[in-house]
Image 1 (cartoon, rainbow, N blue to C red):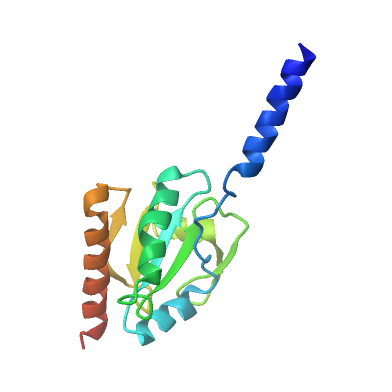
Image 2 (image 1 turned 135 degrees about the vertical axis):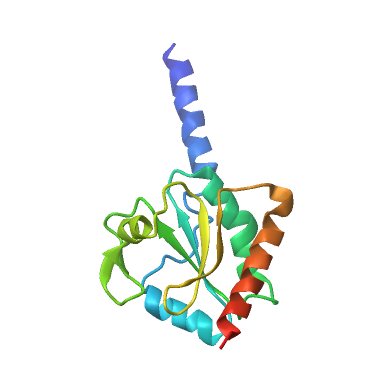
Length: 160
């Protein structure tokens, strides 16, 4: 009996070691929303923020399948800044759009984020430039929702 338990334990340890590391699809965490949104606006695009949670598999899929490829896409990579805000980040410091001290959880609450993932598009003043994408939606259309929101945001930035 003890050999079976030892074999099972060994197998679990090997599986754990072979598994991808937690957070492998994480994007850079937001640190200073005022500065990051100004940087994006200077480049002609929005600050894209994904509101996420550490235990959200849909958030991981959106980051891995859509936001990371968008950040690498030559059409968008120099026009957008993409950051992550952790809805469950009560101790993660963050400067808000007005330059005030807050936390990831505090900004998520202020933005009325209840369910995640939420992908939001901001201008330099914290104004939303396009309607946020809430939830994981249909995979066949998610990329077009994302690209449409980026283009809408760029147009909103260029309005006098």
